[in-house]
Structure formats: C-alpha cells, structure tokens
Image (cartoon, rainbow, N blue to C red; front, side):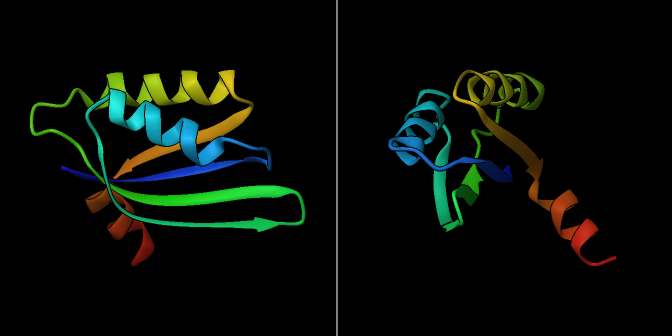
Amino acid sequence: MHAIITVVGQDKVGIVAGVSAKLAALNINILDISQTIMEHSFTMMLLAALPADADFKAIQQALTDFGSSQDLTIRIQRQEIFDAMSSL
C-alpha cells in the first residue's frame, strides 16, 4: 500500500532525521520526498510504501503522536484517496 505523508511545523534541526527514523521503525519505506522551508515553516511531502499487512489506523496514530511530541503536524493518507481528492 502506498501513502502520502505530509509534515508541517516550525523549522528546526533534525526534522527529516526524526521523521525518517520513525518511518523506519514502523517499517515504512520512503519512495519519494520533497521538502521546503517557507519563511520559518518547514513543509515536507513523502510518498511511502507501507507493508502489505500494515495496520493503517495504528500507523496514523503513531505518526500523529510522534508529530505532537515534536511540535509537528504529520498526516498520512492512502495514495488512492489522495489521488481521488486531487482530481476533484
């Protein structure tokens, strides 16, 4: 299953490293990544591959909790839903 993950927050050292480590701990592979800093705000979008047996709700909660602990907003959406919403 592929998913789109977005990360938004105040720019600080270690965001990419922290998010990457969390994804690795969840056995999620980063397929593509784009990031930018606008003023002092950090934004990142990732295309990720989740394991076939992944519990999407558990991953979603784990990323939300991790984001909160890092003062970041992290959202995850299944790629097919993201694509459908983008085509509206």
